[in-house]
Image (cartoon, rainbow, N blue to C red):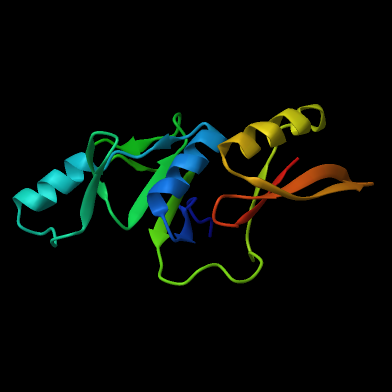
Length: 152
């Protein structure tokens, strides 16, 4: 039996989901999802708890959730939820304390690594270390909250 491909998103714990969404949208060339229409509908129906939203980008956004999606992937037009490559950041009370068990690899090509590392540094990332191995060259970095990722 062949299973149809599944839709998925990568959910990442964060201290500040909105700032993380801004960083990763800029880092990946993705767009921050606009959930204001969904928020308005929930508010109008009386299903929105007090304090669940804040204002950012000139619109209502979730206080504890933010997502970015690839601009070319399909999405739900009412909710603006990505149906393809998508990262969701959710607020958690505890800080990151150990190495990631899962991370992103940004494929830019060996010749573009130095320029891409500098661009990401300007966005708030830090370099952790550089690797030159027989199987490839990459730079391991950390986003503004310390989540590791590689540029290769």
